[in-house]
Length: 217
Image (cartoon, rainbow, N blue to C red; front, top):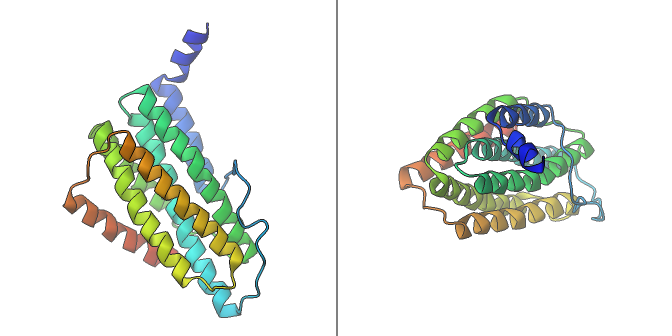
């Protein structure tokens, strides 16, 4: 009976339904963190109106990044070649959902909003994740490694840009940065193959488009 249940769970239709449900929840901004928010005990520094707008823009960009991460892992999990790899991507997606919840919470505290472009970003990232998965597990893992490397650098730049007295935002971004490093290392250890240079450049260009637009809308 247990074996039958496991097979049913891994049926393509079940994965499609689970993936569609997750996509709708992510786009709608419904996320539940499995870990405490790292900003929970951080001091709530006073921000000027200009600083508050700037921090909100940065955190909106980070939230969009997590929307894209959910799409990537959802696609890679659905189209992975083995059950073990599917579970690996699904687990990474569950950990990234913490980031989605934390950034959304911080945006609400700042009196701001998530990006109205989230459905577009999700769709684009899902398409990229699907292509990566169809190239095989090793290349799909390589895509994860490169994505996490670029995201970690992006988060490090945000730590430089955030006001030094905004301890709450800084606590969230720093924990996100550490998690991304860990996810990249885990993918590397599983046998990731390096992403070709043209693909790395394309990913950087797409990242710039995303960050440039999400900061404002």
